[in-house]
Length: 97
Image (tube, rainbow, N blue to C red):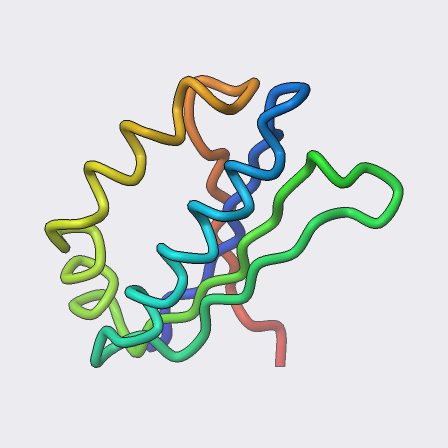
C-alpha cells in the first residue's frame, strides 16, 4: 500500500527564500529515491511563507528508506531554525476511493 503524507511548515519572516532554496534542493534528491512516487512542494497563495509538501512513497519500506537517507537529517537540522514550528507537521493520508 502506498504511503502518502502532507508535510507542513511556515518559514520565519525573512527566511522564505532560503527555505524555498533548501526544499528545492532537497526535493531533487528525494525524487531520485527508487520508492518515491511524488514529492511536490507548494506555498499557499495567500501566505507564501506557508509550505506544503505532498509526498507519496511506493510502500512503507520505501518510506522508511526515505527516512533513513543520509541527507534527511542534515536537511531537517538546517530547516528547524528557519521555521516557526518545532518541526514539519506531518499528516498521513489514506485514499478514500
